[in-house]
Image 1: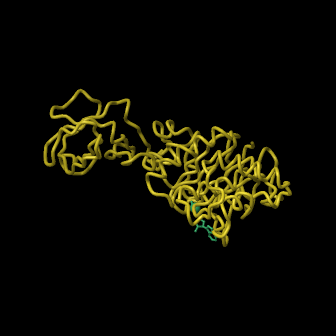
Image 2: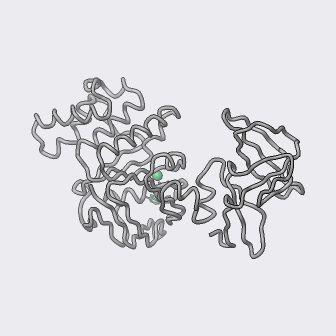
Image 3: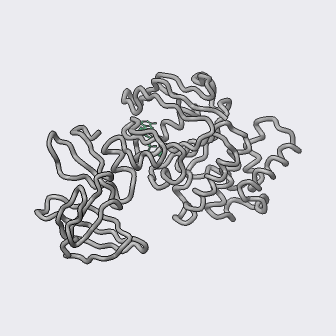
Length: 330
Ligand code: ADP
Ligand code: MG
């Protein structure tokens, strides 16, 4: 187990700073999810931890120790990628064992480890299969097992679920949470998918353009976003942002926090509008409401399906559910 620290870390490619003066502590034993739009620097950050592509300046510490001069193989980290990186000609057993061969572990111990770890990830009956005969989810488990067999103190995962279909992705999310509980090791999981981040993380580190926007538990990011970017990145559909008020300040509210009614309610924020679109999602209905005057349009998510397109409504939001931003979006 180990914590990870970035101290004033800068990473440049061709004199362009992709990450600049980053300070970040990833807690020991936690499931931390690095999330942000494509190109914001997530993979770059993981590669610096692994030592595959070290920082331009600043220090990276693992377990309190500066690893700047320590080669990747000696950092005690294991990385799992989106495209599995398993060997097609080797059996599952050989693939998992491969991680150990370089570490001079004797044969009996190798066999014992491979068997116990393959049980942990649910591959017990598949050890003699070739990867081509496995499903996508099973292949991803082989990649996980191969990382686990090295007993790393840190697991780095770069969008490992992106190639799986929606159902399997949801199942693997739960399996990874359970695996993390079993192992108690530091997990750093990278994704561009905010649903994945919200559902798996102890702590979310939300990045944009190489900078950390917010670092907090999922429910805190959801309830108290640090700025407009965070507010609109987390949540589907994104947070509504209201008309400009004085000094360029704005307000926001979540689609699920707006209430539609036919009479003006006693709510703090209330505006008249018309239902522009209605989308039945099953347990919920998603409405788009155009305000009278037509300057704004807000998304509303409701558990009731009471309104139809073109109907006039009042949209209300309770004061406690409004979030305010200054002219800089903070
Ligand atoms: P993410 O994983 O969040 O999608 P990356 O860390 O891969 O983002 O990339 C962050 C930025 O760094 C991007 O603008 C990307 O083009 C740039 N970048 C990454 N690797 C290299 C490289 N080897 N050479 C030049 N630019 C790179
Ligand atoms: Mg990436």
